[in-house]
Every structure is written in structure tokens, then in C-alpha cells.
Length: 340
Image 1 (cartoon, rainbow, N blue to C red):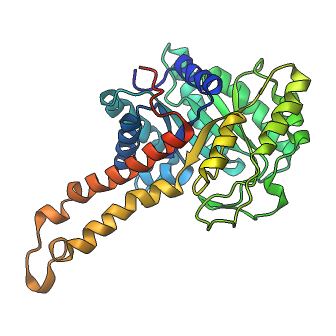
Image 2 (cartoon, helix red, strand yellow):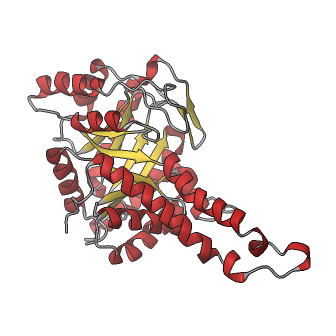
Image 3 (tube, rainbow, N blue to C red):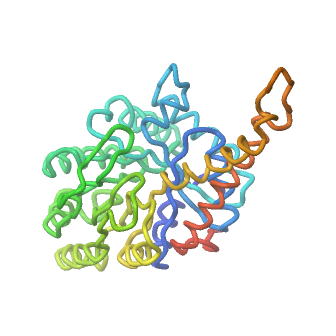
């Protein structure tokens, strides 16, 4: 099994929750980054999640076309084929769909998947994220409830965000302030609206100071203890220990201690994008600087085909990104935990 079925994805989440580990969720934008993610998971002997943002999906369809549905399906199709050779299991996910993009992206994908399910097939994606952090919580949860029902028909899992992640991702920005910290009241409102599993399974990104993008040490004040407080408050209401399957957004640049505490408090998925982007790009820059006269036809020379062949620097980029994913799997304790 390479791409998780709905049943296997549920098993992955259950295993992570019970075993106190989390899966790296790696953003992909191209066949090369898909390959790099699979390579990293395989080297870590970890299952994992690959995910595509709206910008990544548009880029994958062609930067002059920008068809977010076509790009999403293309990346998923490539992953489904090549993942067979890596000996690990991956789930495919769409990341950070804000309200204005639902009708042009996630809703069409859910409709396609509902038809696949009616035909006796598995859905293309295993989960989709609705990011309602830029609208009032009440409206966020109304939309989430509707999407949860659609997710049931598509046999997918919904991911929601309750709270605000600071910084910028794919054109969506939020200030770094007290809104970055979800409250117990927010958690209770969520479970009252969406249930505790009886209406369908969902993942919850509760925020505890998370910020997307690049930042220096000390700029972000993470408080993972908030997750434990919310789990306790909601658990007392629904009669279930650690009721939320949690997601850690804005994980790039976090300390090992912060990651460990978040996982101990119920995080089963951590998004990493900024760090893997750099890990992919850094070896390419090194290669071009070291082989300047090979990748360029300097002073009328012919260069060196072996230096500018995209496979030459592409392999280095994939290896660099893969190594960063291995590091993430080790920090998240998913290394060595693969299903098969």
C-alpha cells in the first residue's frame, strides 16, 4: 500500500495518537518535491502526509494556466504512481483553503471524490483543510459543519483551524498578537458544533502562538501547554480523554522541546514548508556557485552539460529536502513507525 485508503489513514492517525508521535506534513509543488518527500519518508522509515496549497496547485498546473483543481489532481496522480516504490504509506491532503477559495478548489475536489466513492473507488485525497481563521468563529464552524458532511460522502477527513496562525502563506496574512492563542471556550464551541467524531472525523489546528514563514529565535512565543488545557476542558464535556486530533501549523523553526510538548498534548500532524523549501533550494545554489563556468556558457565557451542538466542539481535538491524530512520525522517520533 502506497497511498493510504480511508481506513488506513484513520489507522495512521490512531497509531500516532496512541503512540505519542506525529507525521510530518510536507508541502509539494512539483514532481521533484513529491519525490523528495517520498525519499525523506522512506529514509526515516516513517509514513507521512504530502499536501498541496492553492498556490502550489496552481503552479503544478502550469504557471500560465493556474488551474488549482487540475494541479491538485496532477500532483496526486503522480504521487499515487511513484509512491509504490518507496515502501511507506502516505496520505494526500489539501492545505489552507480559505473561504474565498472553497468553490473553486475544495468543493469541486470533494464532488469528484463523492463520485469516485459512488463508483466503488477510493477518493483521490484523504483529507482537505478548511482555513476559517480569517472569519468569525461562528461562521467558521457553520461552514466546517457543512464541509464535514460533504467529507463524509467523499470518505475524506476534514481539517479545520480554530484560532489564527500569524505570518503569511499563499497570500493569507495574520498579525502576530494575542489572537494567535486559541481558548478553551473556542475548543468547546468547536466540539458542540462538529461533535466528537459521531458526525465524522476531523483534525483540528488549535493555535498556540504559531507563525508561518521565517522568523528568528525569540520572535515567536509558542505555548504548547494551551493544547493540554483545551484537551482537558473539552474532554471533560464529552467524556473522552484528549478528544481532538491536533495539527501543528507554522512548525518551521520550532524547538525540539516545543515540538515534543505539542506531540505529547495530542498533535498527530505537523506542517513543514518553509524549512523544506530552503532545504530544497540550498543545494541548488551551492551547485550553481561551485559550477559557475559549467552551468553558464562563459566567454563564448560551451559550458558543461553534466553541470546544467536539471537531473544533476535536481538530485541534490531532492536529497537536501529529504534529509530535512528525516530530521522532522525524528523530532516528531514517527521515524521507524511505518505501517509496513
